[in-house]
Image (cartoon, rainbow, N blue to C red; front, side, top):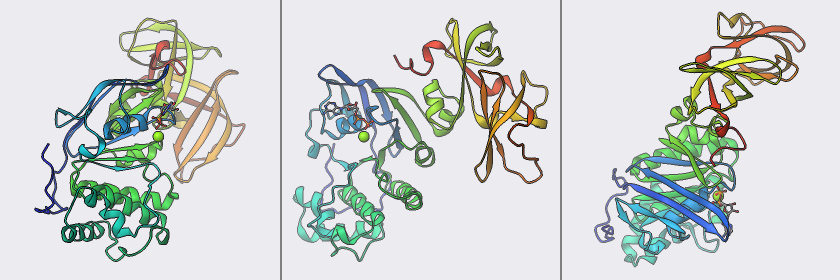
Length: 382
Ligand SMILES: Nc1ncnc2c1ncn2[C@@H]1O[C@H](COP(=O)(O)OP(=O)(O)O)[C@@H](O)[C@H]1O
Ligand SMILES: [Mg+2]
């Protein structure tokens, strides 16, 4: 892995810096506790991959292993197909923005950004040129003399980013970089981050527990749960074709209907719920089982006149109505035991249903996925 020489001072605007990153069968034990189990993934050069999962699912452990701040119990880390897991962090040439930014409070912005260059023995005049260039890149060209405490949250974020990329690393790791920002700023910083990443062409791995952020910003998303990789794919693949109920639940909203298996056809399965509701969906990762879970997106639930001649059609009563601006969310009771959440587009000509009103609800078999019990909530991933 050639180090980038400071004397040549290549332009930060160069595209195509990125190198591939591979995590191969990574496991991490803390005593008896399994923090990571056989995690394997490959990030392509220049790709923006997000690690998404609930708190404690192993995201930071994975990132720290890539950066070199955590030793794996077993497995390997490769950059450009070369193993780097024996190298100390400062020899891996990876830019890192930690979960809590950790700007040096007593150092100016310029000195913060210069820090990785000085650590690497950069010559002072080149350091200054580079620092200025990267501050321009993050649109803070005149902020060099300020202290971090004299910056807004978003500006501090930009400085942390500048410090992480100032030495032209081919790989950038970001641990919940926007976690501390309010919603509006967070959204503008997401766009900003994506722009900078594209411009530099750096292979980027970002951690978030915010599925909306992951969907917006990523080329691909790796969903983690309990130290394991549940699924990796494009935002659309994960949303349209979740491999497990966990992924279906974590990415977007979904109804989860549990029942006993009644009929198994070539492509579909019909289950019967405790409330004697018979419902059908497409089979996914099927193996014989008595119990299965049907997963259905709220926006695929048809309500009232929308319900045509579909495989799943039930009489129901509106139990609650939530106004969400561009959509209306109904909870519809379809048996003593079963309710469905339906999300309909809020368009003016459509009559609004009220609490207590009777209606018809349904869905096409193709719009629901049935997972066998081994994949159901509480038991997935084992
Ligand atoms: N140094 C440690 N000692 C013991 N357990 C740890 C240590 N670091 C992390 N863990 C545990 O490993 C699991 C994964 O942690 P982490 O990777 O930080 O999760 P995430 O970033 O997804 O929230 C958690 O249950 C956490 O408590
Ligand atoms: Mg974490």
